[in-house]
Image 1 (cartoon, rainbow, N blue to C red):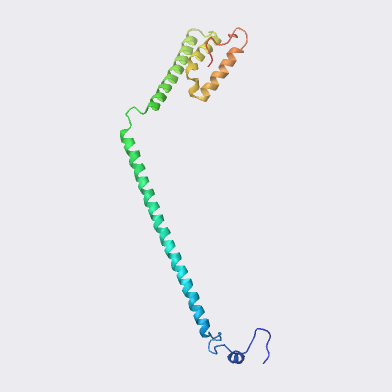
Image 2: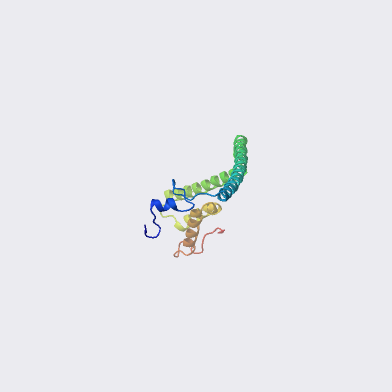
Length: 176
């Protein structure tokens, strides 16, 4: 019986040389079996080596993780030790910041107090003199905050370039 390319009848496949009639698969000659054995053996050996490499890599990863866990514990212990030995009043830089905040508060309170006293006594007080006084209070602490520094610069510029009678000569203090 003649069929299109690639098709065959059961009878044709059963009669084909080298074909197993029960499974319709090619029969393996002895040489093919030996080659397949060697191929499987080489594959098994390659997979066993790969498994050994993966196990070794896993062991190295565990050692790295253990080392990192130990470092973390050491750092936590150091932080806790520092927390326990922290001075009551803070470190040297904390003390300096506290002094700066105190100085700023005193300067601003002094300036506000002076302005309030002057205006309570005389509502017609010279505003340029008041601003000059506030600037003298503000000058030593202006560097502590960008807003204070900006306020100081704008007020100084206003005082220096103000209209006549407002102290056009500028503030009577040095601008740093």
